[in-house]
Length: 144
Image (cartoon, rainbow, N blue to C red):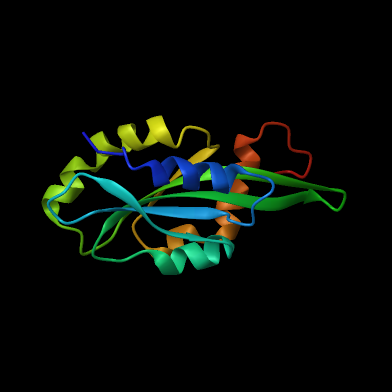
């Protein structure tokens, strides 16, 4: 079971969700290689491109992000995504625990439209994620 008891996690989650805040992503990392305790290691305002650069190939991490996109020239939508990152250099025992820990993370970072499983930074390109968000959003009048 993952330890998500750090109050900063809830605060960062609410900050990302707040319309009054510019913060649009948060990153959770394990305290150490042997610990199951997660903590907020970074937050940012630069969207998915900035978040991509925050991931470490030697770690497993979780991220929560607000994605803003246009459906047409008249409207904008904001949706939230949960990212489960497993870098190429992540240790085997950590990888083995990810599926169980992801359920614990989902209990805290509750509201999101899609989950993105990322192994490479290219898995976090904005266009494919926006396409998935449009499909998950229901009615689409632009053929997506």
